[in-house]
Length: 258
Length: 268
Image 1 (cartoon, rainbow over the protein chains, first blue to last red):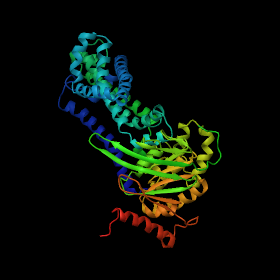
Image 2 (cartoon, each protein chain N blue to C red; image 1 turned 90 degrees about the vertical axis):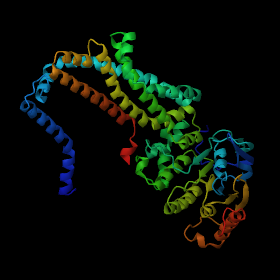
Image 3 (cartoon, chains in turn cyan, orange; image 1 turned 120 degrees about the horizontal axis):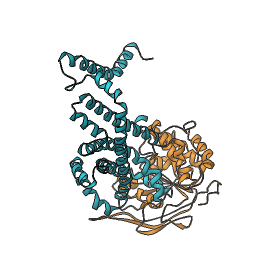
């Protein structure tokens, strides 16, 4: 049994973050009328919440488009990035040729490509999925390569001494040892994919949360603007948690056990 | 390979014939082993002692089929070794347990790789763990075990392959002194049960003399056999008090003198 003082302390620690959040919202709610700000300059949290509920179906319909773009872009990045990482890992000339180029390409801000993508791919799904793909592709490739390369050479010798072939070495040792790093890359990538899709929608779109936000902005509908921001954030958090959940099912967390 | 052969494996016969190893790197050739020539009787325990970098681990890697030799040949039960041999089990200096697998699944890893049937070997794995004092630990993860326990699991993982030849590469080198002493005692009793051929590589002169039927002393690089010492102390040997045993002291002294003659050990 923990004693009273430590119990109080742990309760305080656990409540600190939510308490701060609540405090910020209360101050915001109270300060807006006190300062005489109108709704289109800064809506109160209550007004924003009310908008989320009243425009729920509009937000949900646009969110569905954005989610599709994010998941498609991310899925493509996984489908192309993992085999590419394997090729880089297993085939040295390929690594020599491609890896430096990949790292160099990573320095291009992918967002700057958005107008070009619209030019080439039009106003539909194309540029959004491409942008989500491009922006999430590099972290997936790099983290997979790093995960594969960081393996203790001793483990490879161990399974080889048991007569393992390269395929067995891969799925018994290399893959499980690389998974924590791979999932680290996935989690970075999914958050970036959301940004990519939204930027794509800013540039040219007829639907999606980025489009909705621009519409709200044009109509000085600041409450809806804020509502969109909140839905976008929740979307990112949700996708991140789905990946964390999958990670928990697939990856044994060494750190937790220690 | 001979998967249905569940009889206790007699030790394998090992012939190391004039084996040399030169590592070729871009700017220099490292001569690791120089005409090593040893014949090992089946079922005997042979310890190899030598200074760091003398090529004793290279010798073990060649026997394990992990490193190609430059000249000479190695025969295990008459078969020339070019790749890992199914009759050979290896225990490395670090336990190399897969941290995402529990104890039982780690012990069964070679069974999975050799497609011998996990379920068939499960009772065997549990029996081996019981023998090394790990009953009830089957479901634990490696991170929950102490260093000594982890190395015991690694030994079980080698033994489940029923190796005619067990190769041990400084298996107690990473353990604390007290755990090491316990492991030395446990290894003797384990080997007396299995009675296979063991090649045990170590830095520890006392553990080599205590455990082995025969101690091979290697010279500094390029490694060759400097002294081939038969240890004639009856078994079971008692670790406690062995350092006061006249015969034991004699053998340890012989090994030391060999190192001194080579300048590996110097009195200042």
